Length: 260
Image (cartoon, rainbow, N blue to C red; front, side, top):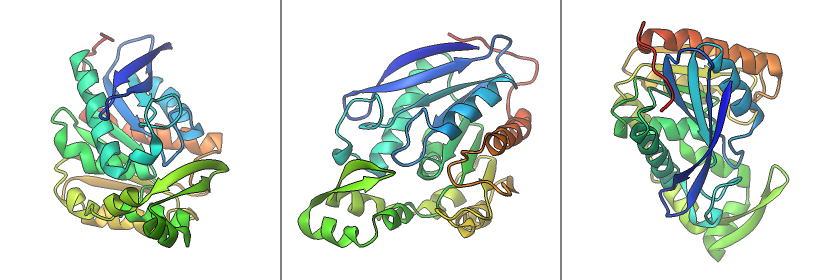
């Protein structure tokens, strides 16, 4: 395994911290991974899935969205739209290095983001979501009754996964503007939807709604027994193997590339 820590110009002017992991052997294609809300590129799901995909000849670039982890920027100025812009900026960086992403993979709100941005990226051949909400507004449920205070006061510091984040009115307003299922209907890319029937953070109906809205070739697999964050090693490996097997038909056959 070859690992490269990289810095990528972000959509908001700062630098995004990325990690590119490339197999030692031939590379069938490159994937771009979008992490879950406030999680970061080094989340359990992101790291385990990336490493498992490399065993199947798929190089993976995962990165921190603006204001998260090692990436620069103020989280309070970001929103769902800026996540889409960050993904587009990272894809452009990858294209400039002759490794344009053929596969988009997104976890939770990152899954919603890859659905929202895919039509902007002509090199993408297939899209995968893991435990993704069918409506970005689902993330507001994590804030509970604090949403009303954020809207009234303009901003508020909240704790998510034990860490403080400053949430703003513009975030609430932006996430409410996106019609994600319309994006899914017009995706025009093969889609794999992975969702646990026992997910207690993003209910399984979200995955079913995404699958139903898709008009293109699509597959749905239940991640039986998995939790939302895919913290179980076996569950993460199972998801990665499913993704790798499914994606094979959409990657170049007998035409391996190498890292630029």
